[in-house]
Length: 430
Image (cartoon, rainbow, N blue to C red):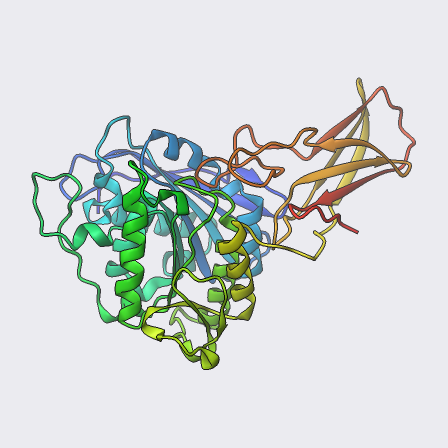
């Protein structure tokens, strides 16, 4: 462990019902330590007494990916998952410079695991929640983040609740004989038996298949699925029919997956994760789009996609068919709505939770029962469904962060205002 003391900051921001914390480390020149600077941003729900787990959203390789990852802990939809299960939401930001060797961090054996664990210990002290240092993890990884997660699976299987591999895994690289003259190969990774007990979902983009640049994301995820499933691992395959390497609308499926796995695995107390009973799951043929309860499945289970429960099986079926999921429940109503007269008119501010199933698309502003505004006014998202927090290529909110604020220009105090939340399915709060 490096001797340099981490830069501990005061809480960065009080959010709607939680607080964000941060810890940063400089680059290290010591053997076996992370050679890039790093920051770990963590969000805690308000009033949480015991943190039951850490939801880790790990970005991919490149300066664009790490620049966009600074907003992970601000993501309202991922916060909804953390809030439901009394978990923390963690966004690592690895400061890999332009044209650097990404393997120096996405292979955790080069020191990124040590820094990650050091950050958890520091955040445990900073938040006053010592259990953060030892709580189990849900690992979501995109591209190089999936590569990182697959090796963390080998090193720390007893700490991992579940893994979502979005277009990335190291599996096919460690299967090749080590050849240091070939950059893309890595030293062998040996998976202990416990690693095959972790529920996992392999999620490449269908358009990566055959793509000149991203084909290995498809072939690697597929090879990993086949090898793990042949050994009885609880793993599924969920190709995104709409995307290549961008993350698209996978959050609607990955959040549902972690929700199911947290329910199945988190203990009532302590950190001993419960084992999966695969007989209670659902199964589907590889590259199929229909699932059945495990007891009713007549195909070869060693080649089937494993799905944790009926609720996720429904979401998975919709996702592999359409690239998204449906929702029939309205979002929570906004709260802490306040208005005040300002020079330009009347300013409205409010807080809101994201709809657990489908996030937040927009807010409607009503004045004396009539719609007078929308926040945001215009909807756009090149990577998926339009959302209140615009999404990046790597599934993180875009900067500047959207504000829950509206100014009714020219208005005077005295009118009755109402704020309505709209989820990504178009349903309005009541």
